[in-house]
Length: 447
Image 1 (cartoon, one colour):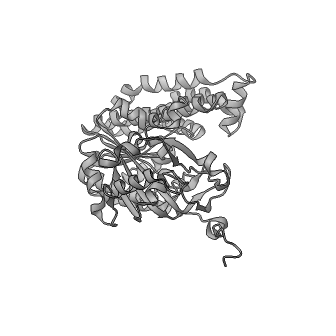
Image 2: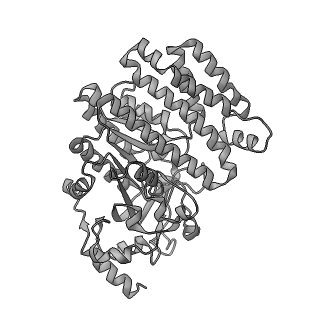
């Protein structure tokens, strides 16, 4: 049952929000909020909700067209996303957008191999085809899970650019060969002292690439700049992934902080590279709310965790905007266990007292809430409140423990988009479990 305080807060929120009408103008306040900032981070409350992906893409299109944003950086592995980058900038060999998504094979493939990302990649290619090379908008990955793929990409680049350097890279990376294809086996063996680590080798490889950058670019000219940058970032991914997989066995905080710091460092590297190329750089980031919302406003910060949104705010004060999403009920694409098949699962109603329940009581199908212009709702919304986060795994039976944490919303985000009822993201490969979906809670009596 809603408390009197919540009822007053709901009324204050209702007087503040802008209802979503399904028109282009829905995003006008957000474009005003963005202004001249360089970094706009757009979240998602789940990794499997169609509306989050669709609205995020529509907002990004306006930021590109009207605000001159020069890149989209996403919570995805660098080499997999770089294939899309080649396609949308007409630098690759893929015949269409579907082919450009082909490298997203690692679990959870549906995060990027889905209908909404496919549509956006097609739009971005069409947009770029009308522009000169240095004005084409890129698509990049921020994550660090691609240890083996990134090693392969470094060697492939050096095979073309410097065969002798390629031999040295193969020798260094051979350190990983006897650990198999699962990087966690490497982390486990080195943490237990069963085998020496490869830290020295991966650092040496990155430093050599950085040291030889100028000579390679001088020899091969400006056209080689993208290829060198891609390879150097892959070498940086290998270095940080090596450390990440070792840190996994030291506790969650250590590995989480390493991963989000890597994403923030990659964002900064992209900003610098794009600024050198075109004289200006403005980047849209797509990642989960847990990465985008400022960790200092959540339980994460209390546990010693940092995240991408916090680090970007700290590194680019006044030039960062954080936008979150929420939903109250519907369906979601998620797995039941790590590595499991994509399923279409029912999302339970938001817990009483949570942000989701509060927004549901506003009584609108969807709305935008500017958290910097709260009026009468300001004080009450700054109190700690539960917020739901669904990643690639959703376990409704342990939802409170598995998927909720406390946050102070106005400190976490600059704005929120709430969709009261949402539906599951559509994977490009539909499994039988996804097609069937979950039975209603009233089954079989509700038939």
